[in-house]
Image 1 (cartoon, rainbow, N blue to C red):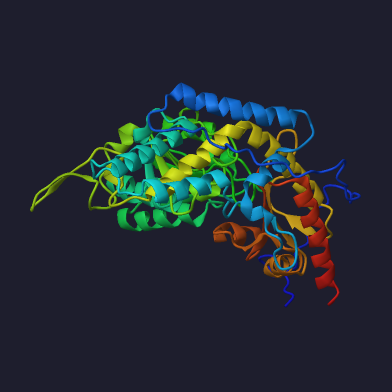
Image 2: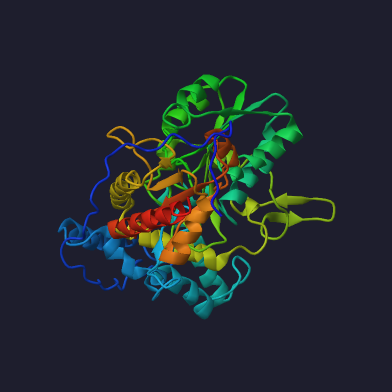
Amino acid sequence: MVNTNTDKQGQPLTKFCSCIDEQKEPTMEGLVVKLPSFPFLSPNISSSSSSSTFRLGFRRFSASISAAVNEGFVSLGQLTRPDFPILHQQEVNGSKLVYLDNAATSQKPTAVLKSLLNYYEAYNSNVHRGIHYLSAKATDEYELARKKVAAFINASDSAEIVFTRNATEAINLVAYSWGLSNLKPRDEIILTIAEHHSAIVPWQIVAQKTGAILKFVSLDENEVPDVEKLREMISTSTKLVVVHHVSNVLGSVLPIEDIVIWAHAVGAKVLVDACQSVPHMVVDVQGLDADFLVASSHKMCGPTGIGFLFGKSNLLLTMPPFLGGGEMISDVFLDHSTYAEPPSRFEAGTPAIGEAIGLGAAIDYLSGIGMQKIHDYEMELANYLYEKLCSVPNIRIYGPKPSDDVHRAALCSFNIENIHPTDIATFLDQQHGVAIRSGHHCAQPLHRHLGVNASARASLHFYNTEEDVDNFIQSLKDTVSFFNSFK
């Protein structure tokens, strides 16, 4: 049951975190009271609502949160937890649920759940295909969700937002539509070894079909993708740079603005995997100037089954369809068809209507809190998590050590000497009700580079608290003691 993690030469892991001295476990000060859930987590917006009313609702809600948090009585995590029903189950495996698997998927607030129920109960109908009330209402709400996504990431036009099944499909859309149409033999695509499989495999397929060459940037001494090597690698042969914004394993954050400038200087395009950044920080696609950007609803408190692609309008206009069928056409003849303008060109068939509306509700919720407020709070949690993990004996945390100049995302992937990460995750779940992830996190090339097959990962969101981290650390230490008792 107990396995040994080894490096590439088969030797036990010997690099362990010694960044701080073990500290006494903190205690919660003061009385923690259960706070009532806000009845509103999204302004009551209809398709006819003005943008000024839309923004005003955000300001009012954000002001109420700011007042409560700034008074110092509660943390953002304590304030928002009541809005997530799943976090208040009586027990999981006999223990209080501690959910620390947010990099895999986030939990959903009541406002999102209600928006889905409301769609199916009140105006369930297909979009763009009917003149009756239900269809018109569904269409308005579906397209309003697109506008909300555009506003959330500061796209210049909602037509630059394409709804997809998930971020993986969004990357495949770019690969098959833009990639197959624009890449030629010996053209270069630059990626990092820390990319998610969904950002590697589609381009492997496209490279096999076009003769393009994939080039990978490794890590620097701080276990962050080496951006200076990336800069050196960019040349006139480079046609595309594919990079994550935040690593789902290392917790590192890449300087996308700089990478875009370097790529554009040689005429290359940039695709950003923003799945781990859009839910946790302010993302401004016009400020980044990226050509393509993808994200998933389910990681940002929205439903599963929907994601989105941002693409600059001048690029989307030149791209052929990804899938053929209804909705994406202009006219169909027996011998040929003409195609709709973007984004419809890339949304063949009946879309995920309820899911899009739920995503819109999630954006209302996040915007009501304020993404900068979420980011600031999560940075505090990120440092707290890293510091507390360092107190666990024989632990190896992957990625950069946080400092004044280095900011980590609120996640840590780690291994503990002579204990398999899946054993750790299993024991935490079954004995303590703590949910973390174990495995390669869809990043096998990165794990091979790190000399391990898998890692354990704890990842936080704004509804987590220091108490969650404390419970996790205490449970992890108990887990380590249990497995070490067999030695």
